[in-house]
Image (tube, rainbow, N blue to C red; front, top):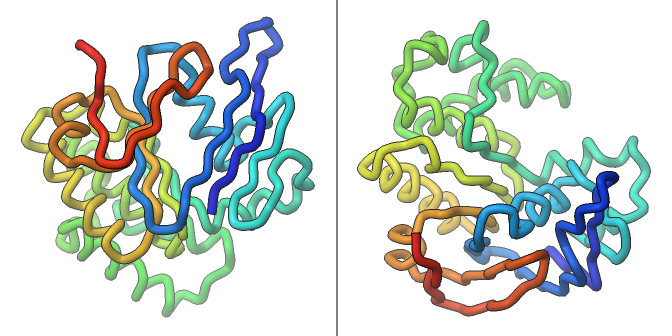
Length: 228
């Protein structure tokens, strides 16, 4: 599913974010990426959906080597990789329905299939009654649920979440995690960068810890392992 082989990432300013990463993530896994701020977590997840390119090494996702993939192939990769951001990245002038539908319109899905799929994912995130609302009319938790709905509307095999509960209160965060659990239970691979010690320690998934661009720990049913 996801394979990194001797992956290095050095930015133009000379900062090395990743320093020889080797990892294998199988389909259907739920993986937390943890570590101190600046450790390389965000770079790690950005490589998976080709927002960043490795300086050296191979990043293979769904049998595509992203190290030398042609730019015209990147949209095809991203159809199978949904992304959920900490700051939601919803389009403020579009309704909830339109925000989610947009992801299907760009791949020229039929209007009938768009309607059906949008309503399906809104049911999954528990917001089927919010189709006509605009993002600024929603709470932070509701906006994040819409972000999740948008990420899964293409039925991606992988969902990447970069600090998805970072701006949410604890009760709302647990509701978001239950949504991710449901998505994962249907076979979708979840990779989540997080600083939430409580969530990681409670949910007992695979934990990959990165420090100074190096994987220092890879544990199944692991714990957060850092003081906050």
